[in-house]
Image 1 (cartoon, one colour):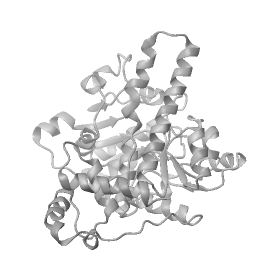
Image 2 (cartoon, rainbow, N blue to C red):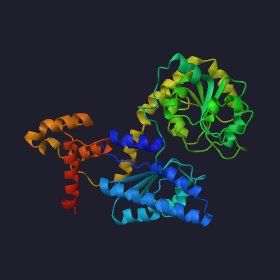
Image 3 (cartoon, rainbow, N blue to C red):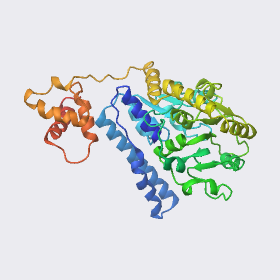
Length: 404
């Protein structure tokens, strides 16, 4: 969900009007089906029917918003029927598959249904996609959001709560559980979920292993001398897998101008200079050596963190990623342009005072067009004012009588 919101923000920063459908709004009802105490076959039918309802809700949103592009992130509940319908209507669809294709293999069923498929890995994933007739593939690594992942001035209380010589923020995957048992002689704090059931690590897991918010995560990154960044694996035979994709934590820690030690990844050298911007390790022995070294050399930590910060803000933001994605898509298809006519040209002189007040409240100005105003009004909550009601009435009239 955070990645989806950051992607939407990146598109908005590029000047696009973005409507977001957040499927977790339906999650509690979906989970409620399990409380019915029915047979497994009946439960499966109910769950599939529920997902069809969510897909219809997405389509209703699409009809209301009339977008030029539908962008989904991994695990988005766009069904086969909905994707087929959108293709038949000529509305381009794209998925950003922000998953490891070797772990989450549902891409085989859905990738051919999208017009464009963006991924965080290269070979052998690309060849596997081409085998199932998916050829519009874009390599699109993860990123950071500079409005969120940024240096902070922490209070003494926050420094004490979130700070340590060595920290890790993330889920308790098997390789991490095994590796971290070798690091317990350090001032080490483990944050995040799925660490229960391990009495050795339990004293190092902070605040009972609760889910940590994005805001708290940024404070952890800022407060730690060394942020440990070990990519996840569901196996514990290889603690440091030497895999390919680069996780979001790599960019987010860099965005906080904080120091990290990251396990060696094959795609990392394309993104950061491993001499001046990032420090990697390929074994537990090397990790311990680098922890010991960098704890004693704070100026080197600072220099690397500052260089990574400069790089990530220049090249690795969600605004950058969305610009690359749209450039890739438009190399194949011309997205439907939305004509823009400043609202000042449409408003009668007698109504300009009321409209000016509304524009100020919505954070817009007279260069904004009708669609932008409608979008902003629909985001609000509470009772409508007369002028807001008038705008929404005109929008409905326009949809009914002016659109074919």
